[in-house]
Length: 213
Length: 295
Image (cartoon, rainbow over all chains, first blue to last red; front, side, top):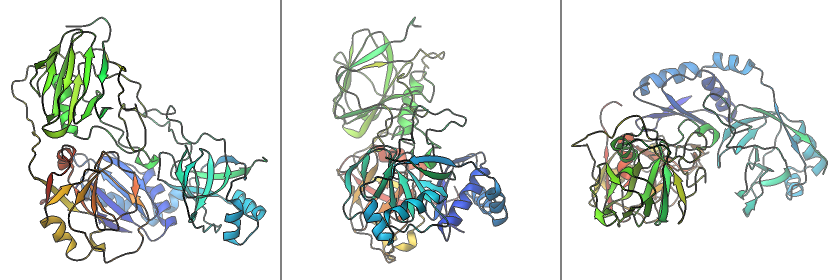
């Protein structure tokens, strides 16, 4: 892990791989402490923002180094989490293109995608838009050459190594392989303690379940 | 001055963009939700204090002016932030001071002469339904209450227990129209740039682009060249981060920035300096200075 400067109230922890980043985030998330304002995971980094009156940058760096060390990562990883199951109708407009890019049939894609275990690495692009990665399945995928001006809410897409689900209608360039009627984002589902508007948040394990059209 | 039932205000003219703002939604970035909130935090905090509101009360952020409102009952209010002519039924009212508007009176905002964002706090605060714990409008994520429209009625909350404070002198950072100096510190990708990029950033006078908004302040000036041209995987962002796009143009992210971004951050504006950014006008000059000392 490298710790990079980010102004007067944040640090950026950088890791070598997505999976190292995901493990470090889960470990840090499980050991949050007062003065921590935001913990923002991404593909290779975790942004740590502090309230400097409660937690200095120097103390935050010490916490970061201790809380993300490998021994504790292992402990955090053993905390079994129940997967969120997302029902998907694999009828997306790009499913044949996506299968062709992977060099397999559409049925093979559906079977690999629904058998794999996915985990939310981070949320980006829009509120509740989860980037899901799978450790054991290769879904390396290029984006569409042209972006769609409007992708319907509930669309399930592939881009890079990620599966994403559009929580609400927006423009987008992911290869769309299916749709779900699961409510991924609900702003009314919130309170100050633990209720979250996002069905999937960083660290959540996700499985996709095939639904016939 | 206590009221039996909460008052309301009616929007006659919304102006170019008037939105409801409070302290925003810190702590939700990992869910893809940015902080949002008043862009000039100190100005909204002062306006709330002047009318005895709690610090988390919601007020209006009024871009440029042109806004007109009527009050249905006697309401204490205070205007802070941008400097310009604010009137109640034609009478000029002092800024940074609590003023009483009588029932049926009209509060109107002239064009901002320095700064560009007025803040209006009304006693009791604006009492729309909170979204994820805040009444702020996030203009990028389209979260929270829509911008004001003509004819809209805004409910106010119950009057706070605290009286209107009697304050003679308040500390105010008055917006200026001249070149402002903003402090910054190194960002995570400073070493992705050509060796002269840092001195260009710190030694140049920059201009605020008219394409600036609540998601970012775009700067016009010399191009900051990169030596490392790899594609950067998206990483977490925060207000004040100075992102440089592939053409070399820097943008200072503001309160409604995307939660993650894929352009390298060369430097980050200090927390204290963020409020001054909120008041920069298109074409106004900015210089940067490297902050010293420990944070």
